[in-house]
Amino acid sequence: MAFLRWCRRLMYLGALMTWFFFVLHRATDWKFAYSAVMVFALLTLVCAGFRLLLSWREFIRFFILLPADLAQVYGEWRTRRRYRAGFPLPDTYRQANRYALPFAGTWTVANGGPDPETSHSWFIVGQRFAYDFLITDEDGKTHRGDGRRLEDYYAFGAPVLAPADGVVVKARDGRRDYSRPGHLAPFVTSLLGNYVIIDHGGGEYSLLAHLRRGSVRVKPGDRVTRGQIVGEAGNSGNSSEPHLHFHVQDSPRFPFSASLPVRFSGYRRLVREGGVQREETVEEGFPVRGERIIG
Image (tube, rainbow, N blue to C red; front, side, top):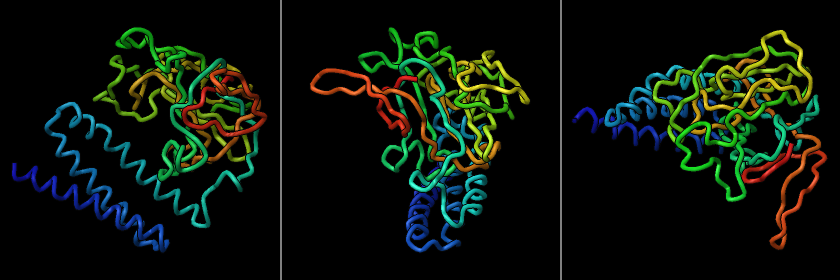
C-alpha cells in the first residue's frame, strides 16, 4: 500500500508539473518547457496506471494500450517539431480538395469543430480537427431500447463513404467490435480499430476509423470516388459505442500526422427556430459539436 501511496503522490506531482510547464510553454514558447510537459505527462500516465490496480480491467487496459499511448506522445512531439512556424488553422489553411460528409442521411456531431471550445482534442494536434459522428433519434438517444446490444445502436452498420476521390493507402479489417456498449474494451490493442486511410492528393489524407468488423470493402491501391461505400460504422478499437471517427491529416501515418482544418461542402444542417425545425443548406463550412447534419 505504501507503493500505491507514493504512486498517488507522484501522479499528483506529475499532473501539477505538466500543467505548470504547459502554461510556461504557451506563454514563452520555450522548447525545454514542452519537453518537460512530455516527461511529466509520461510520469503521470505511468503512476495513474499503477493506481488502476484497484480495477483489474482498467489495469490490464492501461498496459495493453501503453505502446499506442506512447506512440501518440512521440507522434505529437514529432509533429510539433515539424510545425515550429505554426500549425494549420481554419483562417489560413487552404485545402487542396473539396470534401463531402462521409455518410448519407442525418447524423449528429458528438465531438468536433474548428475552435478550442468545440474541438475533438484541441491540444492534441493529431486530432485537433477530428470529428466523432453518431446517429441519434428525435429524443437525442443513440440507441433503441436499453442499448445493451450493438445492434440497438442506430449507427452500427451504417454505410461509411469516401469523402472525396482518391487512392486507398491503408486499410485494416478483422478487429472485433466490443460487445458491451457504454464501456471501453479492456483488451483493445489499437486506438483506431478497423480503418481506412485515403490519399486525396495535395498532402491530404482522410482517416475513417472504428469500422465494423468484416465491413471494409477496399484495400490499399484501390481507387475510390466521392460517395463510394468503403465500410460500415462499428465499435472497434478505442470506442465506447458505435460511431464514426473522421479527420483529414497531412500524412498517411497515424499518429505521426497533424490533423487539417478542412471544410465540408454541400451538406445540410437541422436548425430549430421558435419550436419549428427546418433544414439549412451549407455550401461550405465546419460542422460543430451538437449539430444534426445531413449528408
